[in-house]
Length: 116
Image (tube, rainbow, N blue to C red; front, top):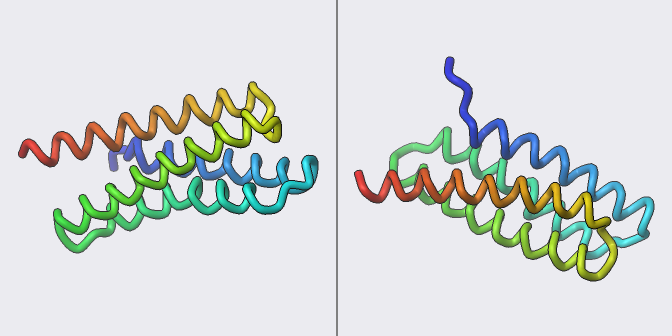
């Protein structure tokens, strides 16, 4: 079976988000924004999984769109946490690179689906 790139990348990203969440909770004692980034960051992969198991092409597209929106939201939280000095620059740079890649992949899948 061929590896599903967005499935693998969104899962790996969820693991990184969990690590960032732990850092924010235990090291920075930040309990509100950390939950926001945990929810949106892990939701990307969860919605990708739902899309893959979708009932129809329309269902697949809808779940993928939710994933895209969650990725946009996560990007916002990473930038906010970076700029408010909760997340170290290097960690935020790594997370932003990953979420931008996820956004490009999802956007490309959506574009392909719209044109076919």
